Image 1: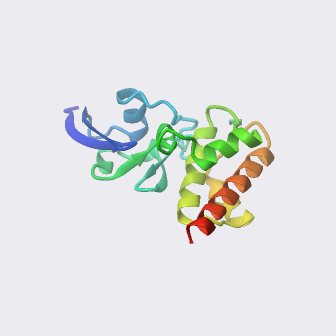
Image 2: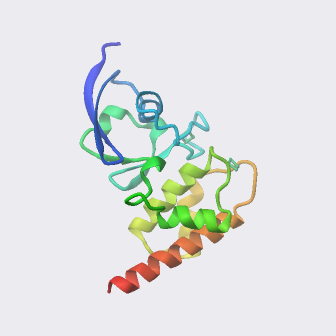
Length: 163
Ligand code: FES
Ligand code: FES
């Protein structure tokens, strides 16, 4: 198939890429840009391991055409840190042992990041509803929820201090 030249903005940097029009964002991120944090964990949009932010909204990159993302800002787990420092959600995962395996954690983290950007003070129910698009097939979720609660607290304090 004939390749097209597109420009993708990923983690704050512009990339000019020659890709097939049918190329999926997940494959372009992993194979063209070597951003391998986003994973393919299923074949039917059911696991969320491939979740990235597109203009701040959590999207499954395994079902998104890369070409459709031109002009939008894509953020992968590699771009979550803020000015070289861990983001609140990354620090909380470390502090609370919230990280699960390398397959599911990046997707969970991106979904939480999107949720907190939209709603810095989500209820437990809102957190659980947001995370229903992400799956861990092998362990419990309790430490991850503890980490998220801690990150929410940090966001809440940050908001209060900014007032
Ligand atoms: S790899 Fe995208 S939802 Fe599973
Ligand atoms: S899929 Fe990652 S810990 Fe279960």
